[in-house]
Image 1 (cartoon, helix red, strand yellow):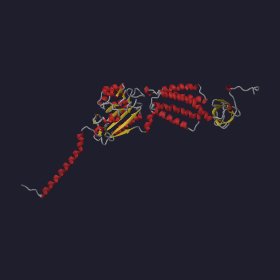
Image 2: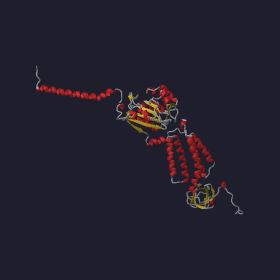
Image 3: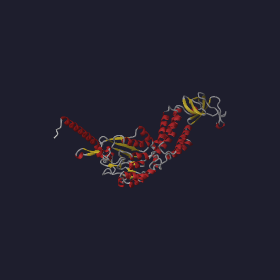
Length: 482
C-alpha cells in the first residue's frame, strides 16, 4: 500500500480547494439565475411591486391632441421606469382631431398592463375612449357611469376612424372579454352592470361590477392575470392592513398621478367649443371698443389675446368657415352703427348674422354645438354692449358732461387729426368725432367751425373757404327771418 507524501497531500488539498471554489461559483451562478428560471413567463413588473409603482393618468373632457399625447407619453414612461400597472381614468364624451391608431398600438404593444377605468360617477367613455377600453388589458365602469357608443370615433369628422370599430370585437376578445359585448358597445350606451353582463368590460369588484372608486378598482385587480404584449402578467396591487374589524385592503405601491402640463391644459381648455366661441365674440367686441375709444390699448390687447386663444381652439375643431365669416361681418355691421352714433339698419342686419353664424359655427357631430343658453347670453350681451355701452363709452371719450351738444353749433375749434372727411376735433377742450364736406378737407391743427350735430358726430367746416355740395344743401335763413 502506497503512502502519500507531504507534497502529494498538498497537491490534493490544492485541487480540493479549486474544486470547492468552482462548486461555490457555480452555486452562486445558479442562485442568480434561479429567480428568472423559476419565474417562467411572469414579468419582473409583477414581482418587484414593492419597488415599482402604479401610474394613473386622468383624461377629462374632450379627448384632444394634448390628452392623446399624454396617453402615449405615459405608456412610454411606464415601460421605461419601474411600473407595475398603468391606469387610464376616462371621463370623456368624445374625441376631436385625434387618430385612434397610434393610441391603440401604444396600448397593445405595452409590456406593462394597461387598465381603463371610466369614472367617477357620471363619467362617460364615448368614441375613441370606448375603443381604448377594448384595447386595454382590463377595463371597468364605475357606478352611474356609462361606456359607448363608440360610433362616431371622432366628433369633428364622423367618418374618420370608423374602420377601427370593426376591430373592437377582436381587441376585446384578445383581452379575455366578449367580442359580442364590444360590438354592442359600438352603437349602444352601456351602464356598468350592462357592460359586465354583456362582457364588454371586466367584472372587477365582486359586489359592484365596475367599482365605485378608483381605489376600489386598483385594489380589486390584485391577483388577476391579464394579457400584455410580453405575455400574461399576474397583478399584485393590494395589501391587508389593520386587525379585526379594522382589517382592510389598500394599494401596496406608490400611486403616481399624472395630468396635463400647463401648456397642454391651456390648449385642452381652449379646444372646448364653448370656450373658443366665447373668446371669439368677446375678442372681436373688445377690438371694436378699442378702435372707437382710442384708449391706451388695454382693451385691444385683451381682445387680441382672446382672438389668439379662440383661433388656437378653433384649429382643432370642425369650424364652418362661412359661419365664422358671418360673425366677423356682424361685428363690422355693429361698428358701422356705432360710427353713426345710434342703432340703425346695420344693427338689425348684424344681429341676424351673429345668430346664424353662432348656430352653424361648428360642423361634425351635434355634440360640439354651443349650448343654447350660452348662445342667448352672448348674443343678448353683444347687442347690449354695441347698442348701449359703446355709445356711452364713445360719448365719454369724445365729450364732457358739461357741454351741451346743441350749443356747440357755431363754435370754433381745432382739428386734432386730419378730417377728410372723418376725423377728430377739439371743441371747448373736449374731443369729438367729426366729419366735413369731401370738397373741403381740414388738416390737423387748422381751425374749424361746428355747423351741425348729428348724434355723437359733429359736422364741421374750415374757418375759411368752406364749400357745400349741392346734395347737402340746407335751408338758409332769409333776410326777413334774420
